[in-house]
Length: 560
Figure 1 (cartoon, rainbow, N blue to C red):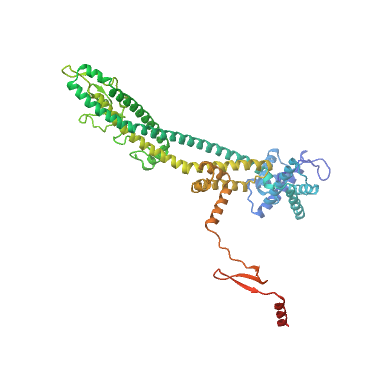
Figure 2: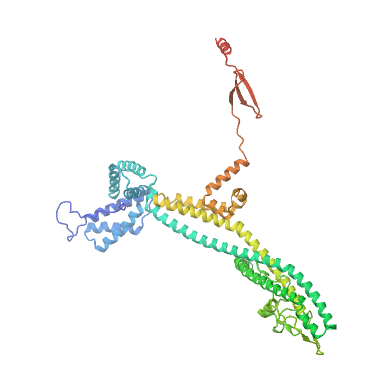
């Protein structure tokens, strides 16, 4: 549709048919445009529409210069720039009619592109309205014919309407599809990240449980074996020969202890590896709340949320421990943990350095090697026995950390799986439903710039509400089906209206409405017509109404 203040591009001769004056230039078209601008300025003043002062002044200057025949090309260009601003501000004959003309033209264009037929009279009425708008000759008869034709044109393109067939609707649909596509991408990435994280956490939690179940009875067995073998070593040192000591190195008891110690150390390393991975995961999960806490309170929390540290000893920092105490010699062996009470407290951390961790988790070789006392006597040192006991002590510390870490991650998994992921899946389902609806609406030109936005936002909001509350009804919704709660959340978010219909049925089942008993009629055994009437207390009483021939006669006699 042409703009409201568009002017004729046709050149016209002067009114008397002579050659144009004023130096050979014809200002008749400019004069008509100036008259249109003056009409629009007058209409703006009566309609409360504000025009810029410089634009009004440019029209006045153009009028005076045309009257004197001194309008230069630069001044003419300035006038037409001001004219375009005035036309855009005034919207002749009114803003609503101008918008209706624009929409009607877009509906006609949509009908032509989709093969819809429109009556010729309606098209002519639209053309006359456009000409009247352009020429500033709008009248009431033109307006009535235009709106009458617009109604028939809109009916011919139904179910599409003027707002859904316009360019604004197409642009809005493209923006909506882009926004929801980006949102779906972000939600999908977040759901995948959390789902993968939950899978990893479950695997680590199961692995911790299995290792603890294997190591707990093994620790008791190895403790008893070490105690028994320690007594045998004492007896062999007192009465045995070198050959007896050599035989003890590879005795069945020694072999059983070696096998138990090897399996125990392997489980310790696996359990400590699980604790290390859990520590990294918890630091990743709680990084944001810990950072916010530090920003808000401007101080350290003490122990950060989700931190997995030693349950018995204080956390050690490398700078806080003197270098000579990092690795402690013990009877010629270096184990990396502190077992001499007067030298280093036993609760000091064996996790301070990589070297101490290695000596705490690995086995010192050879096991049960022969040594010599100060008097050159062969013996089996008690270091080997102490080494096994120290592995049990290390296991107790690792086990405490592992169970604490498992509790943290299981609580985290339960919170995310029970509350966050259902909301995200319901949100994702709502976005999937909206994208499908946008595709169908765009194809059929049914996307409304305002109503569709409101409906889509309401769908997302209700989907989030469904995701929050879906866990309360999971047992009811899963009756007879083998489907996960997250799948139910996605389906409920996709079809949130169906979920709320389910809620309505549930409300009616829990809180049934008390309907007022109605009057009913039925036939008695003797042909009597019985009418059941409700009473105030809800009980029913029957009233007998005899319509036999004798009764009708008595009623007739009474009437006469």
